Length: 260
Ligand code: IPD
Ligand code: CA
Image 1 (cartoon, rainbow, N blue to C red):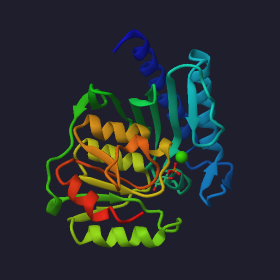
Image 2 (tube, rainbow, N blue to C red):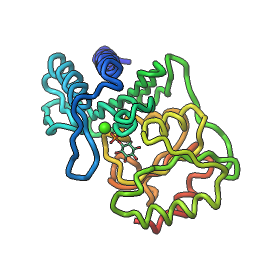
Image 3 (cartoon, rainbow, N blue to C red):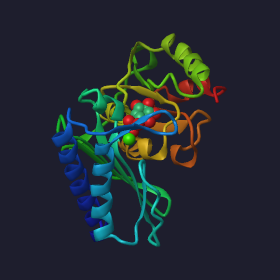
């Protein structure tokens, strides 16, 4: 890692740990929950953790761009852009389910460059850098090599969102093909489970850039594949995504390609 890149990584790590501390201090003790326009919920803790991450970045790298889930985008003059979700798995967090984490991605000249994901309950720290591999707590990780008949699928659980019919149709096709299904309510859990080989396929609908940026790069750097339903690279489009160990990705992509 070059000096600048190493500093960016160090700051990302510090931001993830500081946000993790805020999440743990407030776990089971949320003081405010409100509904967003899309019907999903946000808490005072999402906002506080996000403020901490953003202020660390702005202090150290005032010219970097910052896109986050809960506040307006900061446009920067630099080629670097941070893409942040302070809590992925907010609804789990609200229900005191310990399945949530912090997602921090960094793009350089609009290309995925760095991914950091931290799960404060299990203290699992994932990171990856483009063309340098993916790691959990410093150990290199790899996707599985299981085939479709043995595959564990993690699937988006937001069946109440727009496009319910498409989700149900896609789900029906998948369950007839794969072995087992799990739903964790946090797409960074899905992505990291693929990256470290515990799960083989994830299908997500309606996720935003901050949900997937760090996780999709993590899967790729662990040897897997992530595309939209048309087979295009994940960072170039919005909408549903397929992430997999790469073994049967094209088969799944063809199976779902007519679902918009
Ligand atoms: C959500 C989670 C969930 C996915 C949703 C996301 P949030 O993120 O990742 O698993 O299905 O589409 O919005 O709201 O907890 O940050
Ligand atoms: Ca979130």
